[in-house]
Image (cartoon, rainbow over all chains, first blue to last red; front, side):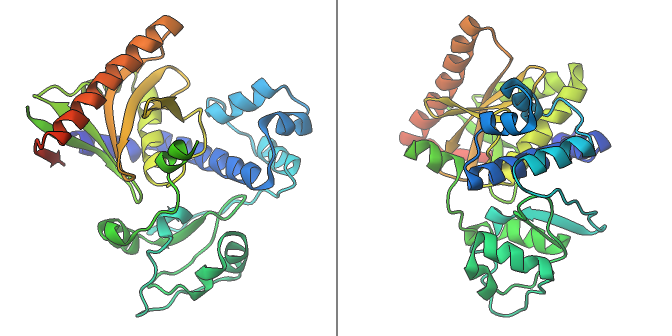
Length: 176
Length: 134
């Protein structure tokens, strides 16, 4: 009999899960960009010419975003919609999982032009970070993710002690 | 008292587990029931768990909401609710599950979740050993 974790992993490895994941990635990047720019849901609704309830519905992820909607949303916050196709064998890791974890001086980070935007937006210190990671691309609105070799990602998880997370949901709740 | 933490998903930032006390694991039971009876919605829920586990600060309250008293809820739009709490920053412990409640029921569900959370922290305080089950 399969364990709970195995059953969850099975469910995560489905097309439906991939679709749900894509929706969540889009809404999270949207919310992050709104936070950075100080745009409220009401303001976004106004820019889009819809009622605030429509924005809530979008964030719930029940709808199937069309490319048209995604482009309109990005334009409404002054951003541009970009997408990328992740090559087989790579995984995407959220930026906040990486802070402090790439500080291994033994290897090199391969930066594409995209990483410059990432550095500017997120942290100038990333330019001094070295690791055996290949930066392939960044996705979406705010480049809050790096694409890394799958093996490296596993190492990252296993070396959990080295991961330093600046602020988590729990920290923010305590601060509120 | 026997306490176990059953792994649901191990993300790059957070380890999400289901709380089991004396052989009872309401979060795991709820997930199993959802998997059987509402499979499409169950898949949505587990992707949401995965997404929260892979980000330090998850922003969308329509998916992962602060419920107060240290409790959080993983939510799906068609009614699944899995209540959880943090032990330190990276261990997220699911303790109770219930379908989307009406207002009166909501307090009861939160109270149930809080009871399980309190039992966990009290046991931990009194030095009970806690086993992580993969």
